Image: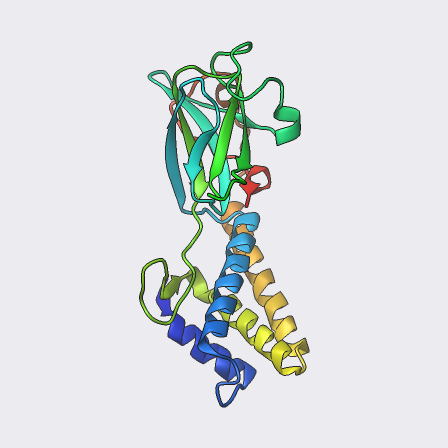
Length: 242
């Protein structure tokens, strides 16, 4: 998986779209590269590619509204962790989750489900709530972290390179080229077709990896109803995307 710099992405996009005379500014190229990388990451995740998972521990106090910090690409799942092992919680939407006020103690105990919401007061943080409301315990939130926006020069809060397997960064290059042609009001049919082909290639490759193991029947009672020593992640269709 070779590292590809932002400058190389721009150079390849310029060649692909046959751009001249700095018709597209460097800041435009980088904004487009950031957006197209996000599209590629979504495609890979939905197709079943194993993402880099980060974990945040939440210590329950009974107060509700626990802040997780920066908004991730997706929250994959939440587990309760004790000396006995791990137990996965169910995700519930914010409307059906409302069974008591935040931090309410009428129904308390080890949580069986969680809900997520955004802080709309200006901080932009992601908050998590549990039901029943636990007064103690540790809950592990598994997330796919958001990536830094791309830039041509190194700086705080920016990245200057991407790393993808099997040359899949070409999807970013094609997306950048497509946007450049749209700005130029040129024909985009060929680039659109190439984007479709590489997306199909990504989906086929990931599907082959996922199905490379022989089918097997697995008892999931331990992870659904009890405790287990292993960490289980649900399929991407059950993740909470942001």
